[in-house]
Image (tube, rainbow over all chains, first blue to last red; front, top):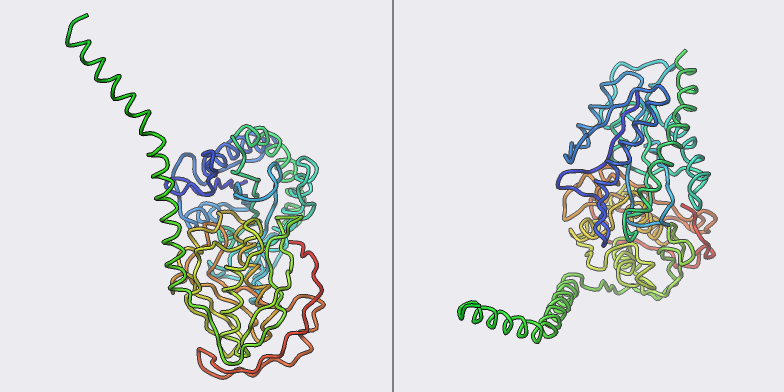
Length: 204
Length: 233
């Protein structure tokens, strides 16, 4: 199961360009295309929002955390950066006590909600690497390695989780972003398919 | 064509002509009002953000982190001369104020020009608390990368110039907020450390007094600034 999270929505449009491009609208289009590509790989897909509404960070996390063995991807469009590139983020360790989660690891009984991602740091990093490699190959100028950042949405996800941020809303119109969408969908689906092998191998 | 219709057309034509005549002056008026508002914002900022000056101020070379000119997705250190206090709290205020106001160019700016540092505290364990006005949250460009660069510019600038700060908490108008501008988590602490390779770590840390706010401490003179280089993100 892959949980796709088109960020923002409703009154929160996210990043907004002077030409009127709204992050919340673009990421919903990205999510719909990505869903098709992932389903073509035989994966089940769930979106945290289907329309122009704005679930809270925790509601989105609840959607993901209710699924067993899920992979979580939150989609964003930046207001800065080199247009036509994409960057993948995972959460950094918070320095707190280790949280043993994920397939093949001894499980602790209870995990603090606000540290839910800490048990999946390594798996998330692996997923981020696989997606970032695809981004570097398909979108010239993209970094070759993923970045760690304190992305709020990732913190409460109890599953391998990454954020993908595409540049940017500063483009004069949506055409270039729309052109990126099918390439993004295909490359992320390939990376997720590769990651699934790692993830499921760990579970056995 | 009836007389009434002719009259109506004539009135409409006159109104259109009047509109065209007054359009340029209306545009100028709108631009003037916009410029005035900007000036008022700056004036308010000037009143609220009082320059920090202490008796121990010494002009030193401070290492500031703004956006790189060659790679805007990363920060690069720039060395500028600043009068900095020996007191780490006042020194931190001076640095953050300079980070907002002394950006070499608009394109290198990491923090919004209207952001105001309302307060800065330093706890005995080396936790700095920077309390900014709403403008930091409202005017930082929304996005993971831009928000991360904003926070990194703060932590790296403090790390390069104030030895005693180990980690930083960012508040907005005295409140803990969930994110900076919709993405970056502000609920936790951001690590603050001297730039790698800097000699700053060889200088003994200033003693930290107990209590929520440190008021006196001896800061080493700056001479330990790492050579300027681009810092990859």
